Length: 276
Image 1: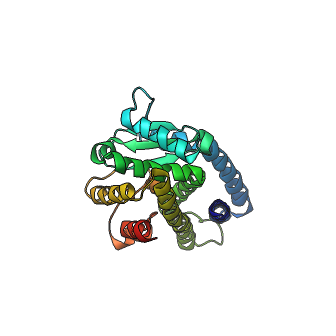
Image 2: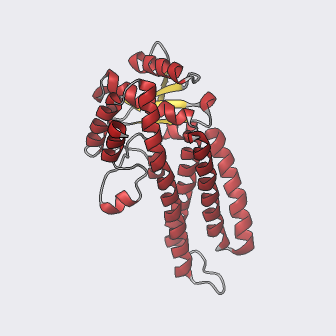
């Protein structure tokens, strides 16, 4: 049932983001809509097949195996067996900010990545909780939607940014100010849609991840540590639209920042794990 509901929300997300993409294209008339449609389809095709490579490359992930991966690789292998999943590729990212994410278009093409900071910070049980959470994203097929949404939201934000400088919609009969506002709203709308769906999926991934790990205690302890350290050690990654991929929000900040947060508050996640 959870997977069916997730698939429904996936369709809603992709449909909503494509509609926003076409809205941006409509600023240029019929030709703009056609270009936006073609570009959107090409981008979705690229995200489908290459989203995992893009996400991992942006984090400078280095693949490890059973010999070089040590405890991390062994934990992933053990928990993926419990979850009934094929072995994902395992990556370590050279970042001191503690975090982790999963990506890939389906369980057969999945990857799990953990930063060096997380490996230093977390003990065995906490790392099991984190990996269980990421494998649940893989099992529930959240990873494709997350990476596609991040790609589209990132592009729309880029278009909105350029709208300020290029004065989009300066053709005959158009209002450049209105055009810029529409583009910005499109980008904001993309982020809000992505955030709303990502937030609900985090609760599901937490619950399923705790079951895979065998107990919620490791994940609860890991979330407390990761949330505290994420506010002190910034994660250097080039695309904030990818924030929804990580187990905790990489950028903590003001109330305005929290409006666009791709994760629910950590306290709420912990409460759901302990009493849900």
